[in-house]
Length: 192
Image (cartoon, rainbow, N blue to C red; front, side, top):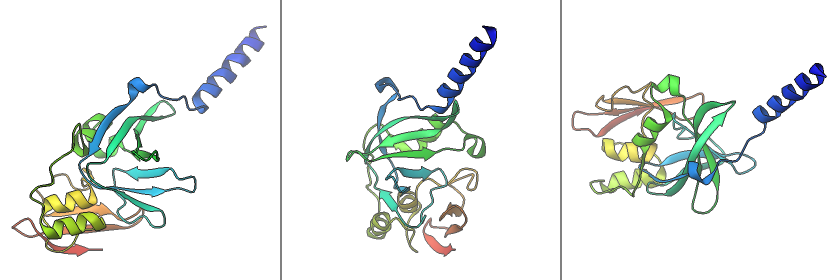
């Protein structure tokens, strides 16, 4: 009898750890993204994004423009904080990976950097900034605010301070690029 109960308990625990339990509506929050979110749609249509930004991930690249109203909820894998889930107004769903140890902050703190509880002002963006934001690219001559809006907040583990004049972004999982700014805070060079 003890062996049967132990086996049943093990199977139940295994099933609970493998099955994804839907989150309650209490876990959901409405937020607006401050910057473009670069995501990649997988073969099932799930959008996948990352703190590393992946500004040119290849086929299925989707740019979610600033001030998109998103439904945000926690994303846990094997009981571990893995980032957050999001849903777009059109019903598309996605996940946003946040590597807490690598970036040195919690998912909640990272969300405060990249999201807002209301739409953000894009005033102050130059015409060139707006072009870069629409294309999801850094262009020579853009401001720091324009680059951040176009490419996302630079990953804190590779760009410890946004006051620095070189920001590192990942184009995909294997390739990076450095966006260099001059003393006036404008893009002077992009190194691929």
